[in-house]
Image (cartoon, rainbow, N blue to C red):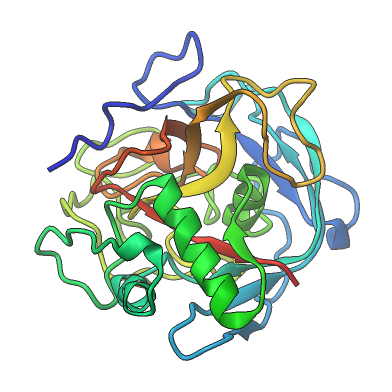
Length: 294
């Protein structure tokens, strides 16, 4: 099996193997932005409607336009060096679940996804989230859906991913300042400031095994790392997009992954946590979620 962490990148000075960051999220519809020290979730809007473009296409949740502060407050546990900055997000759609083996296999059967049939590690296919896909594979899946439906599917930007993961919350997780193994699939075998002692399942679980966030999105915390479009940058800076678009400068040999996985501790599955891998790397802890323009 491939080593899921061997090629990960982290910002200079961070002490853990994986990079983490913080985020404060506020929907524009909710009025004035929350401060970076807010400790309670923001008021949550009802989950938007779901659209599905074909029988084998993923369910897509339409997210409203909004604005949030991207970056971590000094009080967030296990954070990296992340400069807070305001980002405006246009409305877009995002897949309700991580892309499954069933959806990936439909792409392969339809002549897409570079004909690649990833290993399921004997965890099963069907509603299991597809693993062992690299950034190029993830792009190929989105391209196939675009050709099939006539709609523009793509990877999320890093800012869009954070916005979606928060679901209107300003806390470390969409569900509060801490997270338990009853809420997400991660390594909870050691108690930390972010989680009580809990299960270490040792594998990815079928999509939708846990309750969704306020946007109606499942498994934004844990289960699998999810590829996004952006080139890797150790720090947010003057060239960081503030309009929800991906970063296209920096180390573009490496691409960003978000969300953490089944084998990571709580600090790595925060909504703000970020790492990178070489775009061509495959791992049993990496998968994908996709976006669709409206």
